[in-house]
Length: 477
Image (cartoon, rainbow, N blue to C red; front, side, top):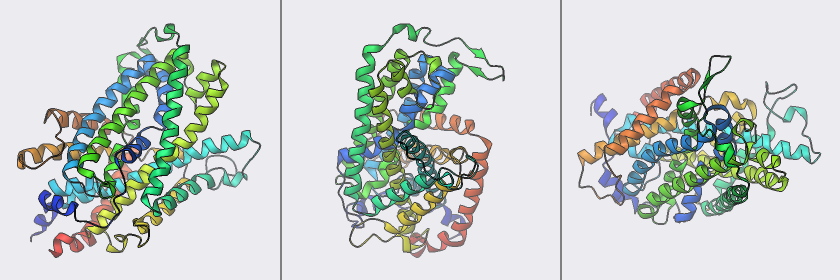
């Protein structure tokens, strides 16, 4: 086989479908609602508790609800494409595996390699944010950590290592090493607490809405002293670009395909259910939040809690804060699970050392990549400031969206009669919408993100050319 032929060799979809029901690497223990909880856990987090208020104050006013709607439509386009692949190829690996089946080995390797880093960095970012909530709660109870343990170097005088952020990533990794159903049950409980908190915000807040706060719904465009524009229709679009990063996460549940009891039926449903439920909550919270408080007052670190404090409902504010602390754990769980399953899939296919493609003999989980990723994310979360880590995320997820949407169109042309338990509607319109939004958002990312992305991709190419290409299972076949 020639060099170029090796780069584009792919796994036949029919072979993947035939193997899907026969693989016994994992224990099939996840039902529809546990999968949906993983998706909701990955989606609902900082977006509902922080971004909705901040973007209302900075860019969109009460029309932040429209921003979420725009972002939701863009994300739904990719979700529909994910749903088709999840039902058609119910194999661990998500976008990596789908790309392997359609675009070839090199493209699949690059997207898997990139998602591995992206998911790990998202875990670190959320862990650092979670640490801030917990330390604030501890301080209010009169408990203060040693100065050196409060944060990374550069985040404050005397800070050396963010101990709480490191510990929570190690704890989530440990949870994922034990039986998958144990972690999934814990995650479902955490997600239920988070959803209940959002329901409380909506149920209580609706009685305190002042319609005058919604006027004007789209504030007039203004230019700040720094020359940056705010509000107007451009502001609504700018807010949509920001909140888009709060409306994905459902892709993580597709990495657990081989742990699903009925993947061809449940994975597409879970993808669409998790995004649908999350979008309803985002839209409702946006309207309630801008109805109970003027949008100009919402640019705080905890806008939802602060809005209820302004109404004198301190017990609601406290409930929301506590729920936010619990809720972020489900985000950690979803993205750590996604990262470990992608690493496992890369190793099982021979693109990374096969030593990582072994499941625990007792717990049936990929414990080796989980341990390594747990330690890696703990070090990143402990040693780096949140601003520096946050700049590096999202490019991999957007790249995966482009791969998935493109692959759906290619496979519809290449193999139109292939069995699909779910079919993306309005092809090629829906995939093209997903691709267009992803390209637009990629163009909005800061330069540092692109630099790190190119460095990581370059390292990935060296690893592939030096190891993966020669050890690929397809090479041996």
